[in-house]
Length: 455
Image (tube, rainbow, N blue to C red):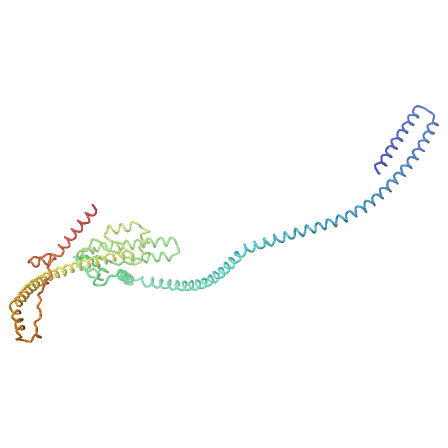
C-alpha cells in the first residue's frame, strides 16, 4: 500500500511540475495574465483535490496496513505459539534421546576410565608406599650417617692429634729409627716369616777397617743366600710440607724431603753391606715405612729410583717389600717341598730294599710249602697202599671193632701261587730291580700306547 501512495505522490508532483512549467512557458510567451491566473487557479484546485484524495488514500492505506499488521501479529503469535510448542516437544524428544545416548556413552567412558585408572591408582598406592618406605629409610640412613659423620669427625680430630703427637715424638732420630724398625717387623710378619728362622734383626757385621755395622734385618733365602734390609725414616720434610699453607714453603720442604731420601741412599750405598755377608746379592734394600713418603719423593724426582739402583740400593715401600718377602717365603716353601721330596725318595729306596729282602723270604717259604705238599701227598699214597689195606683186612677178620673205622685220607691239590711280579722274580733269582726303573718302563709303555692311539 505504501508503494502505491508514493507512486501517486510522485505522479502528482510530476504533473504539478509540468503544469508549472507550462504556465511559466505561457508567461514567457507573453500570453495574458488572466488566462494564466485562471489556469493557475484551476491547476491549484486540481492539485488540492488531488492532494486530498492522496491524503485519503494514504490514510486508508495506513489504516489498512495497521489492520494487516494487527492481523499478521495475531497470526504470527498463533503460529509462533504453535511452532514453539512443536519445537519444544520435538526438542524435548531429541533432548531425551540425546541425553539417553550421552548417559550411555558417559557410563561407558566412565567404565573405560575406571578400568584404565584402577591399575594406575593401585600403582600409585604402591609408589606412595614405597616412597614412604624410602623416606623412612632415608631418615634412618641420614640419622646413621650423621652419627657416623660425628664419629668420623671425632676420629679425625683424634687422628690429627695423634699425628701431631707422632710428629712431635718422631722428631728425634732415635725415635724415628725405632718406629721404622717396628713397621719393618710388621711387614715381615705379614709376609708369614718367622724371626731367627727366615730372618734375623740387628745382625752385627764388621768391615775390613774394624767398623761395626748393624743393618735392621737380614733375610735368609733358600740356598743359603741373604738379603740385607735397612729401614730409613725420612719424612719430616714431607710432613712439614703437608702441614704448610704457603705454596713456597711447601715447595721448599718437598725439595728437602727429596734431599733427605737421596742422602739415605748415599749412606746405604757407602756401607756396602753385600761385602759383609756371605752369599748376599750386590744390593741392599732401603725400606721406607710409608707409601706416601716414597711416592712423594718419586713424584718430585722420578730419577731417584734409577739413581738408587745404580748405587745398588733398592727403594722399597711396605707394599713392594711385602711382595719381595712373600716371594722369599714362597722360595722357602719350595725348598721345603724339595727337601721333603728328597726324604721321600730316600724312604722309598729304603722301603724298596726291605721289600726285596722280604720277597726273598716269601719265595723261600713258597718253595718250602711246595716241598711239604709233595711230601704230604707221597706220604698219603704210601699210607693208602701199604698200611690202610692191612688195617681194613683186620676189620674184615673182625679183629677190631668195625665201628672204629679209619677215615679216608685226601691229598692236597692246591699249590703255592706262582710269583709273577718282575721285582719278585728278580729277587728270587738274586737280582735287584729299582722301582723307578719299573715306573719308567710303565711310562714308556703308556707313551707308546698313547702314540699308537694318536696315530
